[in-house]
Length: 179
Length: 244
Picture 1 (cartoon, rainbow over the protein chains, first blue to last red):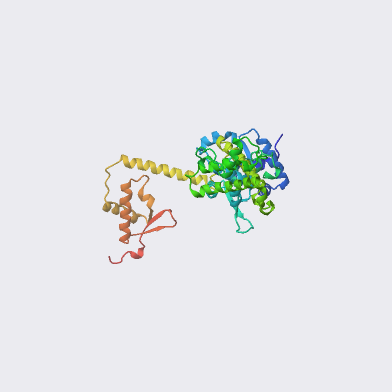
Picture 2 (tube, chains in turn yellow, green):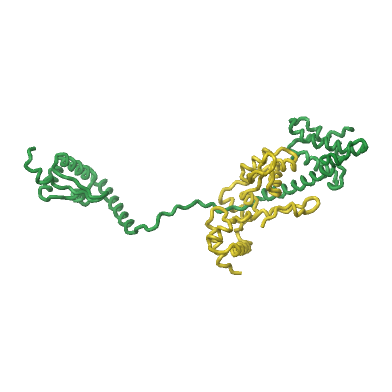
């Protein structure tokens, strides 16, 4: 399989980009249609399988990242610290990740405890963020996961969240769908 | 209500919350989360909550809330005829509590899956780019070479200045020399006065002599452009013949 010229151009732009690049910006930069760019991204994704790189995306934003399998070496090179979270913070993060957008009250209802502290911890670690206010009484904030969350857990997208069987089996309406 | 055997001390650290405790009771007794009569768990739950007396009230209250609902379910199961119709308070049905428990069990499984990934440390990294500030294009390589030659020449001069110590110049002597030179030719450049490789002392004495001559209106000093050649000229003829 040879890489198309568009895939090569997409790869080159993503290589120098310091932050995620949207598909429309890629299309505009390269002068190709959105559909062609999508095919090129899929082509790159296939091509990176088994290499030290991955394509990570959230919605329509794309970035080249290192493969999670190579994390020990990259971390050693960068002198990066390991992420540490309490099990309480992990529970809150799990609710936000799989149920986003979600309000604090909804997280607390599911966990059955006050979540002020864990939400603050996750926000300060840039793992979750405020997405905006919900149109509901009190206009509560809605929370969702961040780009850094995907990176810290080695997920190429929200669609790659680990599938955990709920007691009654997988519930399709429970999974965050990502295109 | 029978008092169950005192359970081992329970700390909040041991449970992530009241639903976690309920879930543990179900798993401890190897019960099916879908079919267990939650009312049957009321006694065990209360026993565990009773062991939490050392905890702050606000932390225990969430446990007490679930405990009270379990007790209500148990009371209903024992005396169904005395309880109000369930459709009035669908919030307190066994089914509602069961759904919450199932949802919590799912969340806990997901949190464990995320925790496994975190502990494995299999994360991604993006390229940390510092924006590189490139110099403007169109540089002149010849100008660079010329500048380098000048630096080399300066270095050479400095070395020689160090090697020839103890030179002595007198400002008066140098002033006389320049005055004599100016008398012969109308103009001379500063570079000519300094010579090919002036020492620091020679350059300073020459400079002071020029300032003195300028002060005495013997010479004019001009420079056409920044860093350009400095020209030293004899004062115009009109000055000659004027009384001192």
